[in-house]
Figure 1 (cartoon, rainbow, N blue to C red):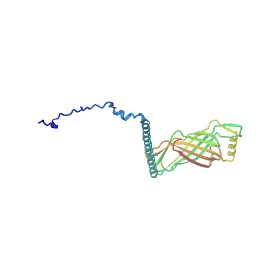
Figure 2 (cartoon, rainbow, N blue to C red):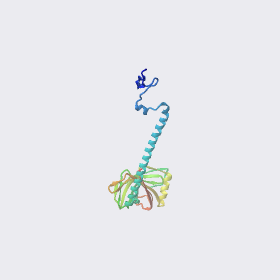
Figure 3 (cartoon, rainbow, N blue to C red):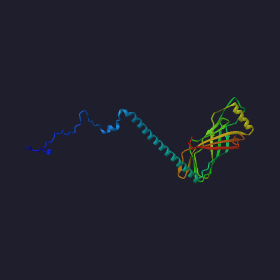
Length: 254
């Protein structure tokens, strides 16, 4: 009787050995991580540059909007501060007037084709500061001029001084002209005006000032005073027939 063969007794079939090596025809390339993020593929380079520009533009717009917002906020805060100061101090404009003019060096004779004159004017100015909590400091580098028509007869300066609150200050300034050339037409008009005892003169003052509130002083502000004054004669005993002054300020000090 032949022996029976069971499957378990059969020798195992040979199997292919396992390996971790890639199949033939394939390659593994290791790329540094930083290059993966920084260097886009050539086909995506245009899209990457466009995206980068858009992102930078958005950042620039955000910075610009932030700056505008801060500037707008500062303007609002300054406006509020100015409103509070106005309500607290109730500032009023100072006023000015010409009180007297004494004239020398204008002994006019019959007009000729051209005449050189050297007049002297002593001008008395009244400055009124009606503010109860604000002082005015009149600085140097001021100017004062007197005109007849468009001819400047003399010039000088306003004295520097401090004017406290609720104060009226009267000061004098000496104006001089040297070798002023007058055309025959202007000289004729000046002689006729003196004969009529109505000589119109223009007085211009430009004074840099600082406004003082408590211990705080502002930057220099230029006060501009323009006066139309009519005198009866061109002598030291001249009397003012009429006067009118208007004034303004230049906040930038020009």
